[in-house]
Amino acid sequence: MDAVLAQLRQDLARVADLGAEGRSFEELIGEIQTATNRAGLESLRAATEMLDVRASAVEVEGARLRFRGRSAKNWLTPFGVMSVERRIYAGTGTGSFAPLDARCGMEGRYMAPQTEDLVCFAAASSTPMEVEELLRKALPAAPSATAIKRAIVETSARLEQHRDDVEAAIAEQQPLRADGDAVVVSWDGCMVALRGEKRAEWKEAGVGRVSIYKDGAEAPEMIDSLLFGRMPEPGMHTLLNEVVRVVAGLRARDGIRKLAVICDGKPSIWTTASGTPELAGATHILDFYHAMEHVTAAAKTIKLGNEIQARRLVENWREKLQLEADGVDKIIRALGRYLKQGEYALEQREVIRKARKHFMNNRERMRYADYISQGLPIGSGPIESACKTVVQHRLKRSGMTWSTLGGQHVLNLRALVKSGRWDVAWARLQQMTALG
Image (cartoon, rainbow, N blue to C red; front, top):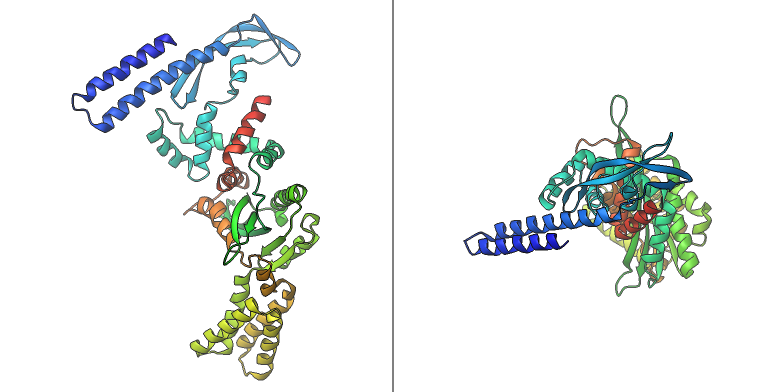
């Protein structure tokens, strides 16, 4: 280490002298980076060598392995590529074992944990080729796109393997905030292109959100969220299991005062919400903006050709829904009167009838004045935003198609990053990897 420090002092002194000779500021930074990376690499190599076992034999899982020689392996570190000489042990009929790899958490790995952390964090938002290009600007040596793909797959597989431990770490170290007034649960789907034998097949991926809301001066304020994303599967079962585990944990921790489910009008969603024990007692809220789509369609049909009157009718019904306790009942009655009294073409009548049926089917989920008085949000905008954030911005770029497994590898990383829980999850994953 003395030699490393002496060389670093010499390199930095040389840089300082060169600075006086008219080097640009950019060149000075580059020279200092080169010097510190070289010192970091040599320091890491010296420290790593001290961790290796020097016994003639080691015992691994009850088997006695003898020293067979040394073998070099390249490790990609934040300081550059480091060639490591490791002592190799083996027994009769057994594979080889490198104690240094095990001690450093580098068994079967090329990237050092800090490098892999950076790679996977970046890959949650960018393609492997983009990550490679970025890291070539940021690191003295960058992994290839192929190595980045492998890191995504291996890290995602470890996340799936240790999901319970990772969720426990998040619940312990960075739980959803406990100073809120309501827990709001939402889930929805968005289409992704899956690789088919001849052409892409569009199927619905699932996105879930568990959010904490705090009463605000004008409207409830979302102060924390956990996001989840799953590739297409029947009934979104895995996604819903992840969501309800979080709700169950919150109930055990805090005893939730207010719990709401806000989703769109799909009957299957409400059947699931009603039949899930962890969501028992939740207030079911049909997204207000989906409701207004039906209001707007009906108003435009009723006041066909008169845009001003149509807008007035929309605003009148909007106010009734938001301000009057029986607003939904009044709109149902009004739509019924228009159907009886008006003369409409068959297609126009169907639009009004459809709107009325929608309100009748969801009457008990459209008591918006009551929800507002309770300090609950009434819109599913956050889950629609989550669909874009978690899935669409990463998996729906031009020309992209995915295998179910490949897409899930990315979503496993992305959901943690977009939830702001990546660092906690990564730290626990490293602990579990070290424990084997």
